[in-house]
Each structure stands twice: as C-alpha cells, then as structure tokens.
Length: 425
Image (spheres, rainbow, N blue to C red):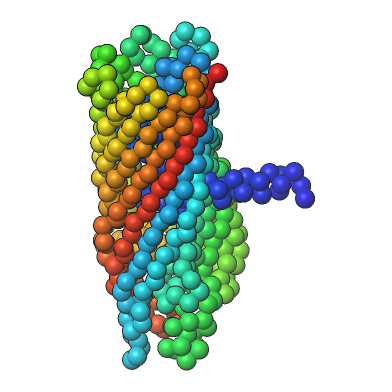
C-alpha cells in the first residue's frame, strides 16, 4: 500500500469519527465543536473566549489568552428522523407505504483546538474540527429508494489562525482553512416498484451513485471588541469552501453512466454577530445571529468524463438565519452554569425538501456547566435537546415507465451529550 493510500485511509477513519450521522443544524451544518458553547445553544459564541474552542467561530478572540491553552471535546449525538406517508405510481395497484423509522444512526463528533500568545499583541492557534456533515441511510427494503438511498458528506477542517490586538479593546483575527471532504449520493430501485412491474424493473438495482473526494481551501476572519467592562461584541465570517469531488459514477441501469466524473459541492459561508453582556459578578447574558449563505447550494450535478452531465438531485436551498440566546451563572469559584435556547431556520422550503437531506426548522434547548479541576484545568459538560418541526416532503420520480409521487411528513429530533477538557500551561 502506498503512503498516499495509507494517508487517505487514515484520514477517512478520522472523518468517520468526526461528523454526526445526520446534521442537527440547518442544511447539513455541524455546530458540535464547543461543549461550553453547546451549553448556551451556541449563543454569543464569537464573543465568548472561555477556552480555545472560540477559534472556530472568531479567531480574533484568541488574543485574550495569556498562556498556551488546549481544548478537546467529544459530542455524542443521538438523532431520530422518521418518515410517514405514501408513494403513488401510474400503475393500477400503485400505492405503497413511504413509512420508515430512524434513518440516522448515533455518532461521536470530536474536535481539538490550541491557542497561544506570541507576544503582547500577537497570538496564534490551530483548530481541527468539522463544520459540515451528513448521512441519511435508508434500508434496502424501503419503498422509496428511487427518491433516496444513501447520502453522505464527511468533512474535516484544519484551521490555523493568527490574531492581533490593535488596541486594548479591539482585536482582529484571520485564519486559513483546508477542508477534506468525501461525499456519496445515490438512488436505487425498490423491491416494491419491481413487484408492481412484474420484475420489468429489477429490485435493488443502482439507478445512479457517485462517490468522490476533494480538498477545498478558504479563510475565516473576525473582530473582537471589548466595548465596556461589561459588554463584548464580535463579528466573524467563515468564507465559502468550494469543492469539486473527483470520483466514480455507477449505474446498473444506464451503462453510459459507468465512468469517472466530478461533483461540485460548496460549503456555505457563515456570518455571526454576537454579544456577551455581564449583568453583575455572577450573571451574564449572550446572544448571536448567524447567517448561512445556503442559496449557493442549488443542485447536485455530476459532470462525467465524456462531457455529459447527470442531475443527481435538485436542492434549491435558501439562505437561513439562526438566533440563539443564553445565560451564564458563576455559581462558585469552581462551578459555572449555562443554559440556552435557539431558533434554527431550515434551509429548504416545503416545495424543494427531499428525503436525501430532510431539513426543517429546529428549536434548541440546552444546559451545561464548567467545573474547575485546578488552576489550569477545567471540564465542560453540556446536554442539548433539538426538536424539529414536522415538515412535508413531496418528490417526483420516473424509473423506466414507472412514474412515482411521494407525499410524506418528516418528524425529527436529536439529543446531544458533550464533554470537553481544557488545559492551560
């Protein structure tokens, strides 16, 4: 095995452990890179340099640390997404159930961050985390495999950053990002359709499937402003990452699809406005408004090596906002308590929602704490419950001579348990 192949397999092993089974934020966005942030539903995160994880949302805020600081977290995500509905066809006995439970598995999401001062003005840091990821996996017996079989996006981002303290109150930061992603999407013929056609359409045959990978590069920046002794403000921006997945197209039904190809997949830009206000020595409140530029994600289309194209999925995402509110209570020198609430807008309308990415509006309810273990070490714990709004899914498909219409409702929720260790030295 070549060194390049070993590296790729090792990186894929990291990827498998680094993303949730299904994204629990809008679209296929991942926010599980800070346990203390999750305890506040990520409210005010860009303005809260409590530990090194702030680098992911605002590199400017790392100037606050006067000694090297390391943070590592692990989040356990338990999602549950169920589909209820039916599929009608143009055949005489053509209605079958679209019901299915638990299309997402549990998963663990790790992250790691390191920040350190260079001198009185400059600081640097490095983050290793995931910002986008998705897996929806329908069983081989599902009646709607021609709408969605398996969709998977795995990613890991390396984010070195540097920050400069312009004045005693204002810092700016800038980072570069290198993101490796592996993606797969495909559809298959369900056994139900095969039975309705008397075997004319074979069951569990791959209609089209593409798997590819790529490196994408981008940047992030931020401003951290200590407006008063009580109030901190922050602005941060993570630029869009463009990826062109290079891989193979496969099909059991269309021979010409079986060749190499590329799939364009962009990870949307994210902007955050954040505030942290200290009411007194014990109480503080936080808030954030996050905008994700999802409108750049309109379709999944594979470009084959022979010059032809295959439309895998129309998505037509829309820009979305996420509003979060939190509070922090310094109970004692050793114990800090947190709670938060967030409204997370879905990135897709009822008209364009698909089984592959069953997105919807979500509400976050969270709580957490930090326990100081020693002068240099602390432990964060957070628990989050995410409730998704019920949402309709309507899709159209033509498989050979069989025309199908899906009319269903998705029901989704998730629980997250996150633990993080922080150490300065």
